Image 1 (tube, one colour):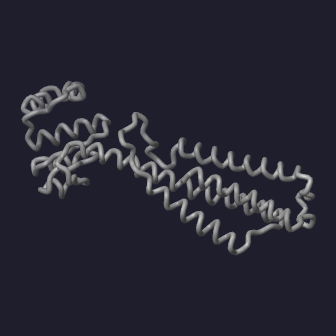
Image 2 (image 1 turned 60 degrees about the horizontal axis):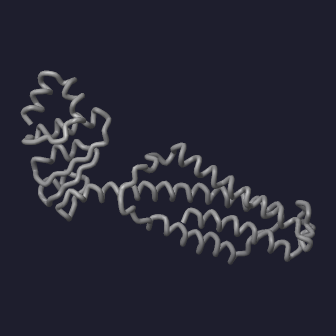
Image 3 (image 1 turned 90 degrees about the vertical axis):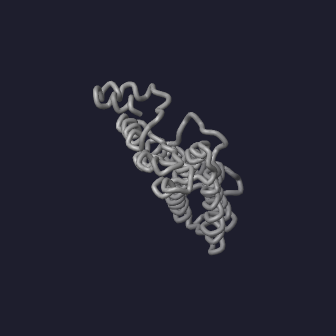
Length: 237
């Protein structure tokens, strides 16, 4: 602690350079702990601090993530409090954080794709003059959507931390590319399915002519559209 304060007082630039290479900061006062944490935060590191006493309150508050390992004053200041007084709780916080971030991105992607693909299928059904019945809407938008969406937040964290981290933002290129890619796949699946359907001998509607569609052909078109909507819901659940 005293050595660290001496370096900060005499040569702050040198202290910031060697800080990432120091493995142990011993005999630190509460002020020293805050100083160490602030140094790493200013250097651009994502800093985690864990402590079990009132003298750790300042550092717990200064860090990006603070984990209290006791029920004392530290538990009031720190965003997270571990019931297990073990430093391994830090890994649990990181794993749960990544799981929460991944689930949030999955739910966001699900909602966006639900609107886009549902609109696409609805346009096709209007062009073909074929519409879902009331019970089909109840099944698709009620039973399916609720059941699949409820599975997304139930994802458990991984058993160990991976070297690759999830994207930190919902509006990132990775999320956008995932959404666009899956939409294109679903569009391609719908186009190929309708093309294969139009090639069947029993399917007489070779053109987008609503008047030429029979009852069994309407059922075939609706089946294709339901399959398209079910596939992407299954992919993300």
